[in-house]
Length: 240
Image (cartoon, rainbow, N blue to C red):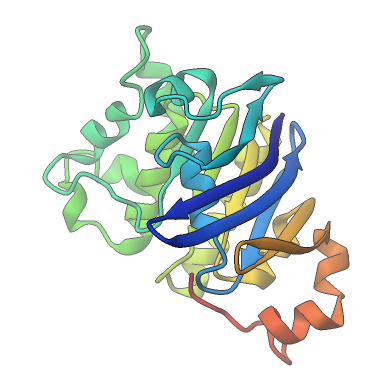
């Protein structure tokens, strides 16, 4: 579904991404893991049209979308849930959900009810201002908002950042349910253990380059990955 070919991205004089190539098959969950500054968020922002690459190509369903405007990227079926959730704090939960469908011209009622079935807490708080929600509730809202665009590919940047372990478990259960419904997922996650357990395939980035790849299961059992990202007890977290 998604193919990245020799992607290079620079910020000023810093080469953030240095010739990265990878693929995300339709229907899969793929994760990018790596230490702070590895270039993971930059890759997602480039795919979403928020950053223009120096060179390389981004292909979606065999169409070159490199440098395409963000609104056109969304219309093609790619949606990004950014790091930090970025909800609209002075708007209600319901209005935040509706904003996710800003490119649609059909009825939203059925899909809003579906969001409430996925996230019952949001239905309870639909008239509440988004800025008054807890961190976990804001993450649920950011996911619901993204799903309202009916994405074919959902990209998530650190969905568990700053959340309690029990909330993180719930978020990952929802991610699995979203994937089972037919949505392809590309994930950056600070909790490498959770990310690899949820992923069909994963890539490891180091200072802007891919250093390793494999199935989530294989990387979980890889000693080098365990030492670098999972810790001795396989539950170490790192922050992007």
